[in-house]
Amino acid sequence: MSTETKPKGQLYKQFDRVRGIIRDQFEFLRQDRLATIGIIVVAVFVFLGLFGPALAPHDPIEHDVRNDDGQILRLAEPSGEAVMGTTAFGKDVLSQFLAGAQPTFIVGLFGGIGTGAIGFLIGLVSGYYGGWVDELLMRLTDLTFSLPFMPMALLLLTFVTPNIWLMTAIIAGFLWKMPARVVRSEVLSVRERTFVKSARASGASDLRTMLYHVAPNVLPIGFLYTAYGVAWAIAAQASLAFLGFGDPTMTSWGRMLRQVFESGNMRVAWWWVAPPAIGIAAITTSVFLIGRAYEEVINPEIQTEQ
Amino acid sequence: MSQFQRFLAKRLAISIGLTLIAVSVIFVVLRLLPGSPFEALVTSGNLNQQQINEIRALYGLDQPMWRQYIDYMVSILTFQFGYSILRSQPVWDVLEPRLVNTLILLVPALVTTAILSSALGMYAGWNRGSLLEKSSIITTTFLRSTPVFITAIFFIIVFAYNLELVPAFGMRSVTASPEGYVDTFLSIDFLHHYLLPFTVAVLYYSGDFLLLARNGIVEKRGSEFLKLHKAKGLTEMQQLARAGRNSMLPILTYFALRLGMIFQGLILLEVVFGWPGIGRELVLAIQQQDYPLVQAAVFIMALAVIIANLAADVLYAYFDPTVSTGGGSSA
Image (tube, rainbow over all chains, first blue to last red; front, side, top):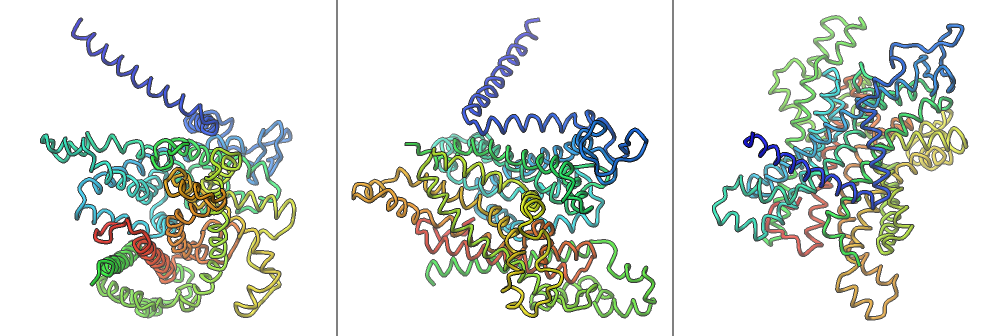
């Protein structure tokens, strides 16, 4: 038994430590009122992203909303039959809004993580090794800067049927350049610090020094840019969907906006425009507000509080 | 050769290399696309096989791939963009007015926002913790993180549909048919259509400048040279002016970078407002698979960014003595 309890005890300790960290983060964010609001919006969004399609009262694409006489309600204002009104095609806006959160959530989450992870690794390697590795990787970054993101993404999406995973990959494949540059310049300053040099002097390999001594010190900025990456990915996904290059089999907030724009009903159907537009604006802004609260702490140069 | 000249030569060589690679990437992506614009013509039934072959030969599409690549590189790098397949007009004749429309919308917007929001950002940074600082940060965070088409839709609904102050779509009234640029852009009708997209563009760009300026001032706030100025008895505003001058460089370089990206247009802004700019034209060309138009437009966009990048690097190295021009990496 004793052999089992020991790792278990350690596991609990580990668990407590993680919980402590999370609690500290929440404490920190609570001090910034804007960040608190951001956290609430993000929590609601995550909930919608996970359970939205299940909560939707009707199928967002198949179901037609009808009134008591059995007629399809087109462009109906919010009423008992459809709490948030209907679209020009007689679909339920509430259902579309709930179901549409999911692709937005998936692309945002994985696009952001992909952006952060690729950017972090490239920035780390580039900054740590320097020399020709740095030169090569930074020229690659320049290249992705010079190729315009939106047109290139549109081109790639014209010859493959768009699905959300492909969109996630394209978005991460273009956006990693931002964290890469920032992480690299952080690594450049960390690399010169004494503890890194002493690790090298005591015989640690390059890989070990980079991963165990340098990486933890630039991790906060990596997380910060992952958060920004989430907001960028959501914005990019919504923009692509709005231009008509989204996944045709799924309702997303960007696609809802495209349909209302294309059908020319923006002037009248405020109940159709508002939910997806406010949804996208709220989530991207919230992520940035949270990120900014951290940036005030992470960025050493703007810490000169007097 | 001085160190600065060596640095300049190196950056120039890198930029040329980047241009070549970017152009090659465009070629690969475009030739990977399945289907060709001719299929649309063939299925419409207007052409027989012989005519198709003639047109393919005219565009060089019957040549082997490496030959097409060389021809493509030579012509695009000498700015000979060929003929638009669907518009049967020289590509440059299609793109030039669109590019002008984009620049006339976005360059004034960028300059306006660079001046106004940098000034506001500096003032906000100086009064750190004030209501002005907090509210300006929330507003610009909202404006820069929300996709531009959503801001545009909000503005259209409020100002065009509800208040009916300005038109929601296009660059001129349907009835207007001006000749030449001067006639087009110097009219009340144009101004009327211009106001809303201009405002949205100004607001969209404002966030980055504001934060950059604000952070710059916050950094300078406690530094020695400002203490000296304070001891000399300069007023708050005079001190702020000194601090502002010292935090201009990042703003200037960011402005150069943004200026390069303007050639891409703001695709979504142009689409929502129906503004006949280069971004909207490119989306149409992609949908219609008009290769020559697409490759020329993407090439112009990439070139503008590369040149702006070069300019930003050189600006930085020239003005900031702490940047080492000896090292190659000045990302």
